[in-house]
Amino acid sequence: MIALPSLPQRAWAWPLTRLLAPLLASVLGLTALQAQASGAATCVGRFPNPITDICWSCILPLSIGDARLGDIGGQEDIANPASPLCSCGVNPTIGLSIGFWEPVRHVEVVRSPFCLVSLGGINLDPGVPAPEAARFTRPEGDGDGGAFYQAHFYVNPVMYWLKVVTDFPCLERGAFDLAYLTEVDPLWADDELTLILNPDAVLFANPVAVAACAADCVAATAGFGIREMFWCAGCQGGIYPLDGHVPYHLGGVRTASLLAQRLTAKMHRELIAWGWHGTPGLCGPYFLPVMDKTAYKTQLTYPVPSTGKEGGRCCQPFGRSTITWGAGKEYPIRGEDFAFLLFRKRNCCVGF
Image 1 (cartoon, helix red, strand yellow):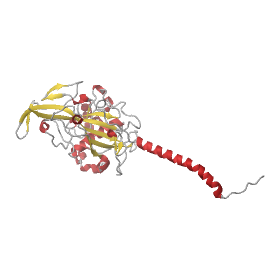
Image 2 (tube, one colour; image 1 turned 180 degrees about the horizontal axis):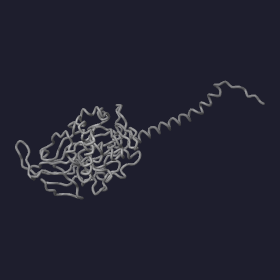
Image 3 (cartoon, helix red, strand yellow; image 1 turned 120 degrees about the vertical axis):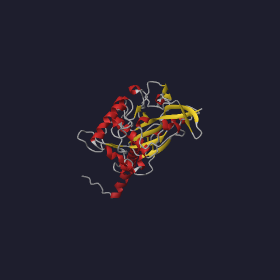
Image 4 (cartoon, helix red, strand yellow; image 1 turned 90 degrees about the vertical axis):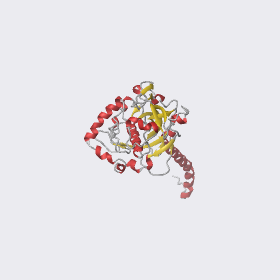
């Protein structure tokens, strides 16, 4: 046997290190790229295209007084002021009582904190800790666990910034703007803390009040929900608590629809959203701390815009069952965040 001369440790380790270093750097670089890609994939989105993603028939029907003039596809409506004539101001000017549904707000429900789905998937994370969305937050014997999502509220007077109608005094003026982030609201992640906003929730935390919501579900699926049952979210469950915790997760579309209602109700309770409909709304907005759910219709704009007239219409009143319009609106990874355009009922006095 030929004995090989023993080399010092440094003599053989140095060439081996030079060989492994580039390989290790490549592996680490590839891992970093994959991590960045996976992180980016958690925040995706698309700004709604006003031509292809918005169902413009939802602004109908148009009305003068209680007479409905324009309608396409039998769009749903609530009661309007009876008289076609109206007057507003200190020195009253006679005008016409006009009614329509104005696309003016936008709500998105997201998994990743500070992910702005409706702005193309921009991650606005300022470094503030916020709970991430989770499904099945608690185990259930029947497999239906809870869920938690973050949500965002936008001002989006799309008819005004698109100049769809010029010189029309009834349109809300403004631009697309982010108005509310639940990530910076400690009440959104705590059932007990949110009682500060809705202490009346304790009145409806009983089996009788919960069972009564079945009637609201039937009414919302046939038309609009029951205005007086303000604690109900129709077929989605209960409005209370006004936070991001949902006791039963039965699909992303259903959960997102419920949280869109809750966030809108929360905006009313915080006096960020006001009433614009009915006789009081003829002369401008008014305080409405308890949301009138019949004053809103929603249209899903992301991930799959509802423009195919699901169930005969592409806009749905708050509380309507998602069975009739939510099929095929959710898909894995890029289709698990949701955005809704809100059409708000507007009555306005247009003076001569």
